[in-house]
Amino acid sequence: MKLWSGRFEKSTSKLVDAFQNSIKFDWRMYKQDIKGSIAHARMLGCKGIITKEDADSIIKGLLEILDEIEKGNIEFKESAEDVHMNIESLLIERIGEAGKKLHTGRSRNDQVALDLRMYLKGEIDEIVMLIRKLCALLLTKAEENLDVIIPGYTHMQKAQPITLAHHIMAYFHMFCRDLERYYDCYKRTDIMPLGSGALAGTTYDLDREMIAEELGFCNISQNSIDAVADRDFVVEFISCCSILMMHLSRFCEELVLWNSQEFGYIELDDSMATGSSIMPQKKNPDVAELIRGKTGRVYGDLMAILTIMKALPMAYNKDMQEDKEAAFDAGDTVKDCLTVFIPMFDTITFNKDKIKEKLKYGFLNATDAADYLVKKGVPFRDAHEIIGLMVNYCIKHNKALEDLSMEEFKSFNPNFYEDVYDFIDIKNCVIRRNTIGGPSPEMVSKDIEKGKEYLGL
Ligand code: ARG
Image (tube, rainbow, N blue to C red; front, side, top):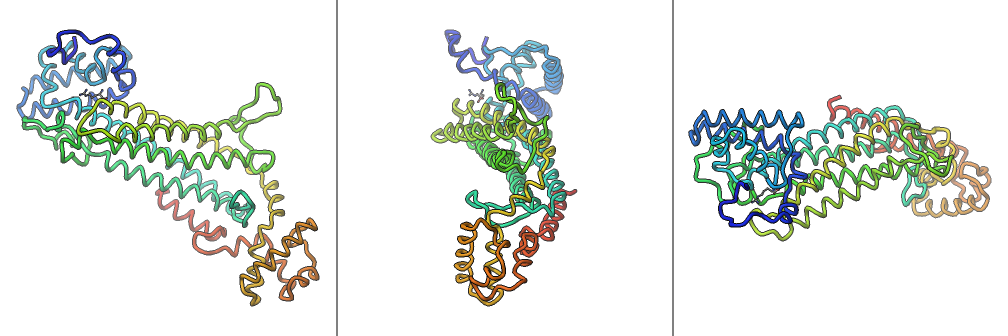
């Protein structure tokens, strides 16, 4: 029998039961549901809304159910609709009359909001730990590669020389912003909605603060309608996940490129790559590609929740049941991706010789050559034009700027002297890029130190 069957003359169609139940996915919140119910029952007992004995027997019954679920002894029923009513029915089955008092002054609407908030707080904690682990790894890798010069790109064209450490630290900063976003999202998830009832609060003298305290919430909601109608925290959570996935995806895209024979900058560890069923020579960067691909599904989760919520009138509507699969999937995907990305990145070998070879071509020092002329008094715009002509000449003669003879330099501008060779040496080009935030080893090591401080390392 359904917990709400009184008003009905017919039992629910099997078709409707199968369609509308959420136990097939919301069973995952059983721990949160039981913890929330225990706090609610304890409060009801303390306030004298139910007797202390009833409260105690409810708490005991719920703890036993929790234990049995963890042991795998409980089979949830689709006919009991969702995790909340499954657990309540189990309780009533076990302890009888007292069990029927648990739902006093509560609705599934504030109950589900509570459970989901608790669940997502846990997810944020886990994700934050993984991001911090990744950030710490990036700091280590940056430190190991402080002096490794690599080409920097814009438009996927060689642009100016940078260091590998500087490149890695760009990702460090991206993931630090992700951390901040999750911390911020946590603040707005950490609001306790119980006591809002179906939408209009309750006539019982509940102690909402007591529940918040027991469940570790910092705040309680201040409007009962908003408390049951709000899923902004889900939207925010999946937004955080989407932005994080975007960062991981960009990182993975670069690793795929760098792993190609055309680049050859990196070698993946054999344990982190896969082969082909037909081409014996292949070693594919499947992990990076799959993370890139999974970004799409997290964006899908974000579109789903935004679209589900966009035209809902106050307050709770059943549409909102669709929030959970999106939130669960986004959390699962982010955790999975971070968990595999970390060892994949940790075990990459940087082919430093190959990278060095690539520095020679692509005129990475062209800006510096222009800067050389500026130092000798030529206005930058003129210097830019002169070096442009020289680059054109070099392309035609298959040379790099530093391959030109002094006569060739002079033929373009009389302000070139022997010291130009040293000035446009790639290493010096990087060392001179010493503005705050620049790629010089000196600046990057300062940035790494600040990063360690930020992570408390
Ligand atoms: N299973 C529902 C959900 O996930 C729980 C809340 C149901 N409330 C209701 N009035 N039908 O949203």
